[in-house]
View (cartoon, rainbow, N blue to C red):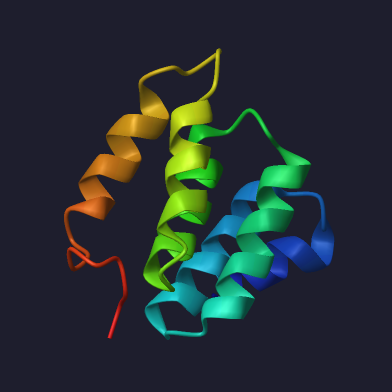
Length: 101
């Protein structure tokens, strides 16, 4: 996370750095911080399938499955299969009820 934070100190609009910080918060089970960073990343770069997929994973991790599915179904015209591929791989790692324990 330290390198992502350095990137953000240089350029706060770097969406991938926000996604990286969001992923770290996700791993640390800091759900709200993870969602906040991922939402910011998506707002900065709404065409990134990776950013959107990670936001969907964070939402699913706290049981907001319907929101996560809506994000996945929306997809990206520029990357129609990328969001589904990324999210499907990560989705498989989470429990069936969507909640991370």
